[in-house]
Length: 329
Image 1 (cartoon, rainbow, N blue to C red):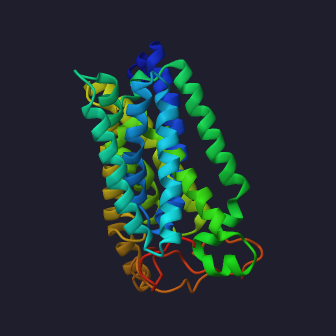
Image 2 (cartoon, rainbow, N blue to C red):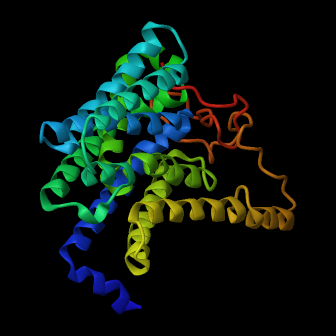
Image 3 (cartoon, rainbow, N blue to C red):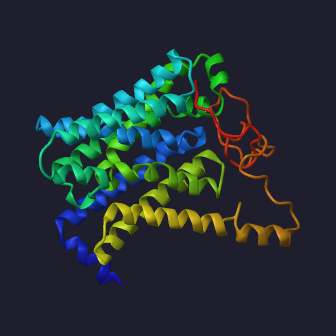
């Protein structure tokens, strides 16, 4: 077993893929926690597809794919925020319109190319094993920017996620913070593109946080579990893809999905283990994932010091009666 784990490390491309997968799993889990709590998982898929025209333009101009995807993804993310605010339409409507338009632009530009373009197909389906030294450095820089920004704006993002109206009333610039958050989502997606591709990137953003939410609703613990699931599934999927000689991106996503289903079936909050424990203790079942505000500070997420001691549980988690979460406005 030890030999099977060590053997792939003889190859430089596999070591780079391990480092890239670790960065992708961490960054997507951190940003994805906010995405899941806000109930805007669809935005990940939209921004990922929006990066496709940027990749095609970069290919035509013989530039950096990462820069092209980053510019297109961030521009689309900011446009989603601008349109939803200025046009006074729901954010999911703005996402749907811009998602279709930008991806159509990418397909249009792609259709002007002649012949088979393997590099562009790699961005559609992902190929983390093809990451070179310079690309790994670029990924590390982007990851540092995203994680550093989240660390600096930790309290503000948390406050705006749980209570955007209260955050605005306390003087936090919620509007500008929303644009920053959308840009962070776009950068997190760009970090993941070469690992799992445009088609599967939303799984890296959503699945680890969704699985962690089935275990706990305490914010810091949820983010830590999501990071562990994201990194563990990325590394495990990479090894499995090497041993089985199959696509790495698809294997990573399948492993994440399998972990989610295991937690759903056996987790302490929603699965068989939780039911057996509650039956022995004679305690009532927890409220469904769309239930009322937390009545117990032990399960409530920690909030900034300028808020009340206990915060409402984010929408979509146990103990919230508001239904789906709305993004901070």
